[in-house]
Image (cartoon, rainbow over all chains, first blue to last red; front, side, top):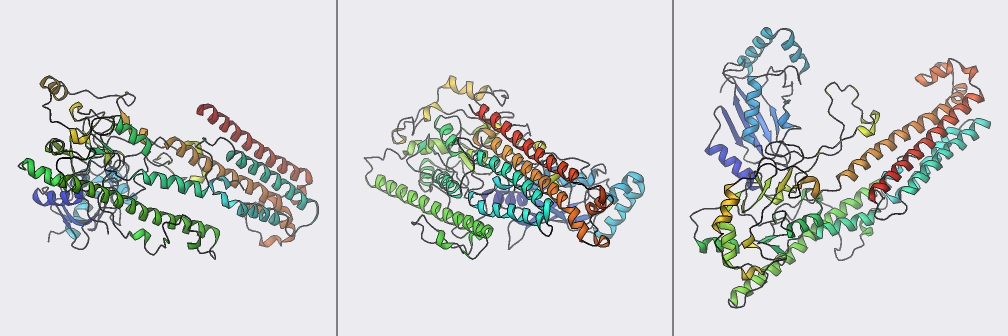
Length: 151
Length: 471
């Protein structure tokens, strides 16, 4: 494997030295492009007091190509599907090499705070969300209690 | 039949074989008039299509749409790779004409000729050798020592995964046909050839760069041993220090470069040349549609294919471009005095305040000072048109096959037991088997010819237009 680009080394260092509140990202020992991530559910969202695990991978072309991020913890959210895949513009067409691991994770945290059922990835969840928002939010709370327990 | 022109030259026999097999199936199993008719019709369409492709690959060698043979393509790629070699005696203001770190030739498919001349014209910052870090507390000697230790190019990974197990043979022998397994199918052979070629090219690049590195090292040692006679191509300590003592981190690769850097035309953010040349338009694609039920690309109008210009990585303004303002006092190397004769000058006070004090506003993409991402990859238009043509040919081909299938069905139908035919095509025709007369068959034949003529006319028109715009 090619040596790790300076950018990835510096980003990793800065994530450790200057962590983002509510977010952790740890590179894997065997593969420094693979990160284990946790994101705390934002306050006043149905995900509050949950801790969600994610995986993040930096492809060879990073930062010209977006990192690949996926939820490992089960979550009830209209823009996150059953496999944990995330529908977020900055992870796809709106990716820019000036963005970083840090900014991507912040965007995901923001997505938890403001679900967007009008641009769904999980169609069934989005439908529930539009039909009966209160019930959907309650279900999201329940899932958070069930699956996103802080360790 | 129709999809030929996207293929390589040596595909010809395969294609003619295919068109024969089409007419064979059309006439297969049924005797008489229909058989000869279908045969005539399909070969007529075939002729029109082949003549079309022939005229495509014909005259006008400058025509970018002309099909290139595999050998020609390989030659061009090798020539491009040669231009990616960093040479110690090709310097501009302390930087170089080729990138330092990026090894992947796919990422470096920019127009090297354009970029080299932009750097020489001081319209784009040169490719500087970056530092991994910089510490303000370093003394002059320390900075000079660190810069002295910099190589021309980052080290290549000797064994890339993608080339694992690919034979490269004798690199000094330009012919490597003997490495290709001749028992493979043509397509496989072509794939193997391209793999071997790429693996060989990668090794060649390593050798070319290593030779250059060696020369660079020798010159540096020699200059050190004879401190009096300096090498005209090597920078003196004063230049090294002046360059690196004032630098900045590129916000994209996080490496430390001498200033001034390129700045984005829209939001004035710095970007190093190596990152700049890696930012490019999206590949040709169909517009993203919210409610896109018809996801099959074949069914879409090829003219809808688009490719948007790159956005600014910092502020997302479309049509990314940069400007560069060189330091007059640092002008050395190509089209300047020797980097060995550089004399440190304090920048004139007035000058500096006018440069740094007054920030320029945003500039339009068309401003003469602005270098856009499209400018360093001028081939994008050709690429888009080629992709559109490829798709158009594919759908024309599908139409032709569809029409010729319609011609065969009635006979096939009369021979096969009615109960077994399940395809919708058979059903519609079996609804009125008796009305299927020669006039109907003739109609379809006419339709087919008409379609072929239309295609060829459209193609000619397109070519004329292109030739016109090329003038």
